[in-house]
Image 1 (tube, rainbow, N blue to C red):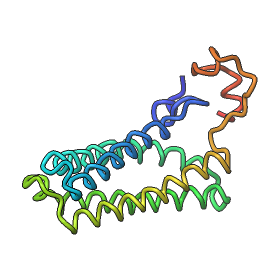
Image 2 (image 1 turned 90 degrees about the vertical axis):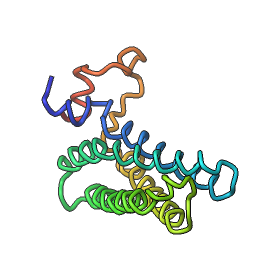
Image 3 (image 1 turned 60 degrees about the vertical axis):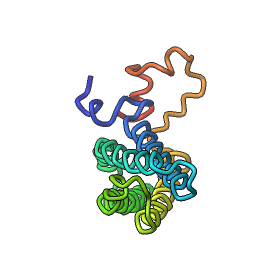
Length: 173
């Protein structure tokens, strides 16, 4: 087993995408909870859920950034893929900074059980920025094909398990 597998994941099973799903899920839930609080549907509980979900998203963002950086370091500089991945990283860094600012500014709202205007607007801005970052991340995989192995005829049992030589060859590992 290669040391890089600990951070980047296995060929055909990269570590970064599932972590992005966890962070995006937490941020999405937090944004919905803020909406429910602002609409008066889930007053105190909505505010508590909003802040805790954003905090959870920030916690999951740490390994997400580490695994994304590990993948980014393998990309040839100056290529279209590198430019897209760099833009993706920068946009998501802005989104993370906005979520962090929201958590800091919104702590009193969490304590008081009511999402107020500024933290709500910051949440929406952070989430919109995250959506752009996600769009760019999708471009990295679905347009540029990063970490996609193109093994359509791979039998299911072999496709879902890591550590096969043809996967390493396909990824160039």
